[in-house]
Length: 363
Ligand code: FNR
Image (tube, rainbow, N blue to C red):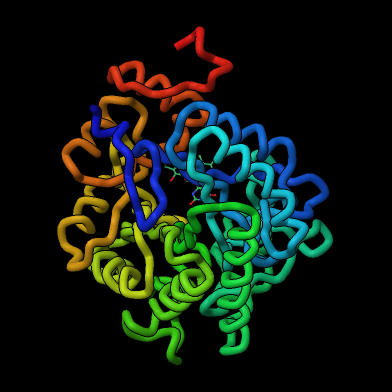
């Protein structure tokens, strides 16, 4: 048996192989209502048909002002959960594990879609005021940043409640894994990183204070997520800003253990995006694997690890899992190029998999 096509059991959930579809925004809700559409169903459904062991939705906003763009998916009402339910069901019917990324974009919210410029949206363009740990806005090159409000204690509690309620709805919709998005310069990462968190209260200052929100949100999600189902957290392992006070891999190792304590089962290890210059020094094959390995090796707990970034071939993914550097090979853009990445990988590695019966003559 290949390592890549061996199952992974986390709590009582078994992921049939080690290939996860990375969360990828589609900016495709119609009417700016956050409701899943035929696009989301086809996009996620075809990756499940393509054999990925776990199919993660795009960043799904826990409240309307937590959307990156007005066209992002949301899960802030039962109507949103109902729109996602058939997608989760279809993914499960294909033998994949349906997973949802729960997100709040913080000060990076309220922008146009990438193909429309990714510029800040003003109130007359359907934009909104955004929130963060501090009131300094994202430094946009073009356009005026939306008003950025520093969250107060009540605002922080409301955010935690939104994540909790979103997780409850996600469970009702049939998802089996909930992933807390604490990476890429969005709200939870903004609290963790000293680059963006200038608070002096319980949610700022030292490591303990800055990571409090990420821990409390993860604990709230775990609180409503059943004991037999896993919770993932995506983090930026480093800000890639070594010449100023910033978030480091050492911080990530410590946070991973802390998140394990509050019930997280796997850290999805990404990086960067806290500031415009928070970019990888190298973005080729496996460009973030070293951070997953550090977390794997240096944590005291048994928390699982997934690696994402520059995984494009079956051999690469097999080598990562086969040498136990990570539990999951998380594949983003290659899944956009090839929805059947997993089936092709199985063929290449000589692994026994069951393609959909409808395709039996092709594999
Ligand atoms: C992304 N990425 C991303 N990450 C995340 O945590 N939530 C999201 O919703 C998105 N959205 C998104 C949209 C698109 C179009 C792309 C290309 C990327 C980042 C993505 O999940 C992944 O981490 C990176 O693309 C790096 O992995 P690959 O593409 O090198 O496999």
